[in-house]
Length: 94
Image 1 (cartoon, helix red, strand yellow):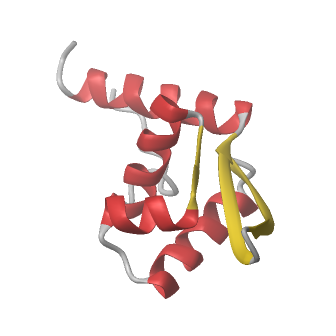
Image 2 (cartoon, one colour):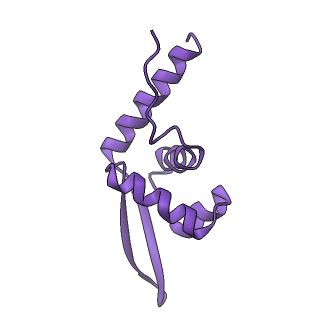
């Protein structure tokens, strides 16, 4: 029987964000925006959803007198991603 896929990670943009953070650990808002080609508003909404689930942590501050937002993957986010990938593997028969 197939396991239900995590609806938070099953979104294309949220999956792209989490996948990138799994490989890199952390990023900033501008890098994620450029990587995903998302609008600032859409990226912000998706980051808030991931933060609400505690899959990422968001730290706001300043860098060279400009607002700077750092996004990091959490342990819960890593676990959710691993579970999601394992569920996909079962769908693929691997």
